[in-house]
Structures are given as structure tokens and as C-alpha cells.
Length: 452
Image 1 (cartoon, rainbow, N blue to C red):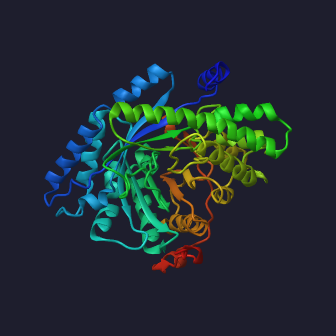
Image 2: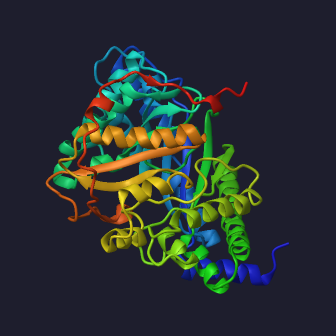
């Protein structure tokens, strides 16, 4: 039974510690939309999305007002378009992206994910067309997000796809150069992509998902940091317990919102994603949590251990609060979206190499990292390969969202505004990976994949 003190504590977390529901994401199956005629397929997609999500934003806003819980984003994820569009006789899937964008605008959501492809073991014709269409699609739409899964623990790493994605990222950066190469902020390269991720830019509606579903992503770095301020100097056991208890309360709120949205929309509740998702606002930072644990500046020695403790405690606390947990679930470390991370880069305590080490124990990977615009495509591909290797070997999701910002060099600043925030252009190793990347083929699955 909830007591009065818990109610007041939750109100305080919302008003003073920036606790919110980061996203309500509706997953929509488009598996009934393929058509040989591209125009007819796009019309089916538009009609399916607008019919399914017609009330999503309205109901989300009603829940905000009635429960007093901020819901920052309302989003949609659809079946990976490479599957849906493959029946169409066309050499470009840009019209499909435009249909998604138009539908998202019509229903009023912030982003729509699913301009996606799964190529961890190889390509089909549809995969080739979709990936080649990504730069133009992202430069000609506002709300569309794209992802490509290039590796799994069971399949290994598709190095041909890794090589291609370096060039795709570079071309996307070029086509959106006038806007700080922002197109790359809507593109994620995954290893072990989850089917039920509610967060952008990597959300898509997996092939094992039902016709329509509601997934919720929670947040609350400020609430966790505030809780830790009450246990200064205490042993790590106490720190972990405090994080667990706070994660439970945060996730319980997410479960409440997910269940209510599911009931009002008349579609099933899927999962609550436990991830601590920071923003560029002061007081809403994962980096500041790590510093509260005892690190002088994020990236200093001890950061990876502190992040491992944080990630584990979030999962342990959150999983008791929800009947269905999924997505990514843990701590996000997107550099531009976390003011503490930006500050650490400026101070020099946080480097690209240290971020890679941190991704071994966090929920995602190298996220929202700006690099010099002249970074070679092969170097970007090699960074993707390193991150995929971490995910495949550790049987976890990892991802790369790198932004080579045209006409910017290491140490410069780029500002996108809003949720995307600002970033310092980070230094990248000057040494070449070209011979490595141009080998192609597939890095075999690790021995841990043989579990049958």
C-alpha cells in the first residue's frame, strides 16, 4: 500500500529532480502493408500509422495532466522497412521514409523509428536498397529515425555491413552539413538490437512483436543523484541499495503510465525500459551520478566501476517494479545529451577511448558523439566494429551513434538544441584502419554463442 510519504516523495522527484517519463512509444506492425506498387505500399503505411496512433498524443497528454507526471516524448516504432518495402519494384526507399514522416506529422509524434534493416548475417535486396537510401531519407525528413543491426552474438559481425555503414554515416553528415550534420543523430548502428526498444533513434517494431503495443521508457538521473547525496561517505553496499530503491520508485511510475496508456488506447502493454536517459539540462545527468559516487570528473579512473555498479543496481531495483521489463534498461551515456558528459570532455577527463571502456558495462554504446568532419569512413567503420565486438562477446546490446560534423575539428563545439543538446568535437585516433576494414567478410560468432 502506498503511504502519504511516498506520494510526497514522488511529487518532490517530479518537481525538483526532473523525474519524468521520457517516452511513450507505440509499436505498429506494417507486415500487412507490402505491395508491388510503391505508391500503394506507402499509402497503406500512412493509413495504418495514422489509424493506429490517432489518439496516442491526446491520451499521453491526458495522462500527464491527470497524474501530474511529465511525459516528454510520444513516439512510434514500426516494422523494419527493409522487410515491408522489399515487395515493391523500386530502387529507392526514400518514398517510404517520406510516408512515415508524413504520418508522424499527422498524428503529432516527435519521432518515428523503423527505417531499419537487419543484416547481421547478410543482405537481401531490400536491405541493400534501404541502407543505400538512408542518407537521402534522413536529409529529406524531420521525424524519421533509422537503425541497422550489423551483428549478433549468435551470428558474429557482418564486416561488409560495418564497412558500408562508415560511408553511409559520412554521406548522411554531408547531406545535413548545414544543420551540424544532424542527420547522423537519427541513425544508429547496432549489435544485438532489441525488438522492443522505445528509445530513439534505434526503436523499431520487432518481427516477434504483436500487431500493436505500448512500450514506455523512464528516466530520472536527477532523482538518483539526489538520493545518493543522502549517503555520502557510505560503503558501496549502501550506495547500491539506495540506487535500487530509487530505481524501483522510478520504474513503478513508468509501469503505472504504461498500464494506463494501454487501457485507454485499447492495445497491449509491452515493456518498461528502465534506462536512465539524461538530458542536456543541469541536474539531469548520468555523469553527475558517477561523480556523486566519488569520481572527481567523469572519465577519471574508477568511472567504469562506478558505472557498472549504477547499471546493475538500476536493473535490480527496476525489475521488481514492473511485470515486463525490456528494451535496453540501464544507464545511457549519450555525450551531447548529458551536460555532465559535455563538461567532462571540456575538462579533458573523458576521451573516446574511455567511453568505449564504459560501454562494456552500460546499456548502449558510443552514443551522440561528435567527431571531426574529416574523419575517414574506414575509421568510423572500425569504431563500429570495436563496439560490435564488445556487444557480441558480452552478449549485450551495443550501438554507435557517431556524428562527423562537417567543417569542425577536435575541440570545436556544435550545438543542435533541444533534447540533442550540444557537444565538443572529440579527438579520434589518427592511425589508419583501412586494411582491416577492407578485408570484408564476417567475423565468426564467439564460442559463447553455442548454447543449444
